[in-house]
Length: 192
Figure 1: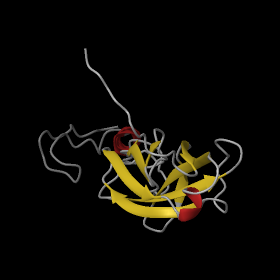
Figure 2: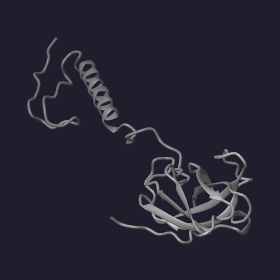
Figure 3: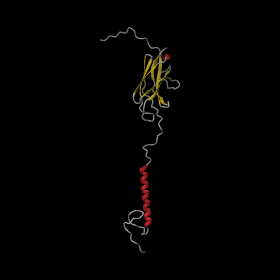
Figure 4: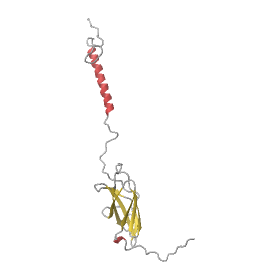
C-alpha cells in the first residue's frame, strides 16, 4: 500500500500542524484525542465556575432587633428612669441601621419579677434609639402606682422592627410602687 507522506505546516480545519488524514487510523486517534481534550476542558471549567456563593443561601432578614439584656430601672419621685444598651445586630446577626423603636410597659403583681405576658403588660411609652449605644428613658408613673401600699412593679422594654414585630422582651427591672415615704425633716449632717 502506497501512502503519501504527511505535509508539514499546512493549514487545516483544526489549525496549523501536520495533516494526518492520510495516515491509517489517524481519524480515530485524532477523534479520541479531541474527545479527551473536550472532557478535560469541560471538567476544568466546571471546577472553576461553582455556584458563586461563599455560604448557603439565607432567608431574608425580618430586621428584628435582638432583645435588651441589661435593663435597669430606678424610681425618682413619681418617675421611673430606665437605662439599657441598645443591641447592634438583629436576631439574624445583621447590623442594625438607623434609630430603632422601643416600647416600654409595666406589670404590677404581688410576686416579684413575673414572667412576661404581653396581654398583662400595660403600655408606659415609646421612643426611638440608635443601635449599639446606651439608651435612657423616663416614664411617668400612673396615679395607681404612686398611691397605696408599697409593692413591686416590673418594667420591660421591647424593641420592634418596622412592622411592629418584636423578638421578645428585655430582662425584668423592678421598682417600688406605692406612696413615697415622707420627706426627711430636721435632718442634720455634721462633717468632721
